[in-house]
Image (cartoon, rainbow over all chains, first blue to last red; front, side, top):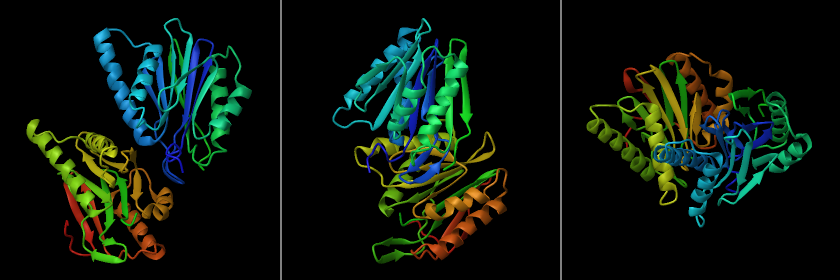
Amino acid sequence: MSIFTYNGGAIIAMSGKNCIGIASDTRLGIQFQTVACDFQKVFKMSSKLFLGLAGLATDVQTLEKLLQFRMNLYELREERPMSPKAFAELLSNVLYEKRFGSYFVEPIVAGLNDDGSPFLVNMDCIGAPCLAKDYVVAGTATANMHGMCETLWKEGMESEELFETLSQALLASVDRDAISGWGAVVHIVTKDGVMTRELKARQD
Amino acid sequence: MGDSIIGVKFSGGVIIAADQSNARSILVYQSNLDKIPSLTSHSMLGCSGPNADIVNFSEFIAKNLELYRLSNDDMILSPHAQANFARGELAKALRKGPFQVNALLGGYDVKSKEGELYWMDYLGTLQKVNFGAQGYAGYFVLSTMDREWKEGMNEAEALEVVKHGISNLGTRLLLNQPNWLIKVVDEKGVRTIEFGADPADC
């Protein structure tokens, strides 16, 4: 049993044509026992910036609050919204501060830059960033998710097609992972706003 | 794991039931322990874990909530705020000296006039739930509550669900838990519905 698989979970973020999508399962488990089916792992930091956190649930919740706090401070001082790039840099530093006693999370930052282009990063638990043009994955079903995304992703998808692709990739991946699933939620972010939908998923 | 706690939310309140055994290894120290201390007039914390941690953590949270009330013009924090405060303390203590307490926080929110139940584990994981369990009890009663819990139940129906869970455990759980304490919180506050043995809080 690894501390990263204690609670279970799966997150994918994908880029489209001037839009991004981020999706997660909604299971909260204690090893093999399922405690809740509506646990939030993807958080809206601003209208164009989402943070997905996979890993140990307590650290997911602690980090969400910590980063919201840091982002609020930034926006108060700078008097402007925080860009995805700056947010990712902040997150990376926050994680590396705990280099020898880390938060047990795998974060994903997904957002739209000022010019409307997609921004996707995933990191390890100590903040090493990995920028991606196409998709990023995190959680206990990463092998499944990489397989699905590599196959299904294509360039230039509009928001509706992105939603379909992202949903199918996530559902197929978590259905083969015992500790992910039990519900799913998808957010699609375009310059016009955010569309959130809950998926009808297998409840096992 | 030995302490069984069951919680059920109903329309206008929450019921929490806990076994009353205080035991370690093969020895039962007492069989009338109250594991559901009150935090405020309208919230209670069903706790599972070593007796020292249950008492220490619940008193710590309760007294801090009382201090807040005294310092802030008689304001009683909502169950949501209380739960998030408790979660924050568990998370802070985790990497220093963890409280080994798994808890169910049941409270009545005076603004929304609804009962609220929060599941909390010793790591600081927090989730609002309609029903929940701590300890071995979860392996037996979560599935029955999946079937039996309905939106908008009244207190009597919720009590039925809880009692069904208790009798389930009495039949199928190896550990002997003869005495159960059942408390309810609603607009009138926290009160005991029934007990197996006259409860003591330590």
